[in-house]
Length: 241
Image (cartoon, rainbow, N blue to C red; front, side):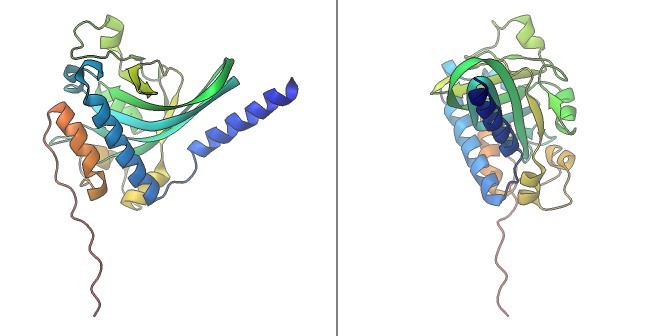
């Protein structure tokens, strides 16, 4: 019995380390494109989507595409995604992040799951700018409601600082992510923006939305009824003398 348990621990640890592996520009672009597609697909079915009245007051929205899960006695979760926040004029360019956590229980199998986190207050934004925070510990969290309106939501849902959702095998629903740890993916941020740009300036809307991120910010802006920001002009190759 010891060998299977040890093997699972090793695999779980390996996946956790994978979440913190370096990102490059291609990784960033794929994450942006996947996140935009996921968000558009989810919001394209109003009766089974995040209520638009909740999105209208959201301060930040994080999307973690296809988080991998391994579960066999010891389960491990990891994911890489991004977050955009409501800036003075529009939604911000994205900041890249990782989400990791673990669970213990007799589970067999694996799944590929997309996650969405809706941050409902400014304190959530401040936590996003910190080194890392724990969902349900540093910020209160609840499984988010689904449908056209959040009017029937419980008081717990309406007072939570983060509402959390998942989509697995086509089914979208609120889910508890309590205990998961969120932290910046600095290598991802540097790959897209270069050195010297800090996360606060990005999420405050002081950094132009890169052309690669336009599709995501447009999707979020459309769903929340917000203005669509101007993207940075595409880079041009230097002319030969």
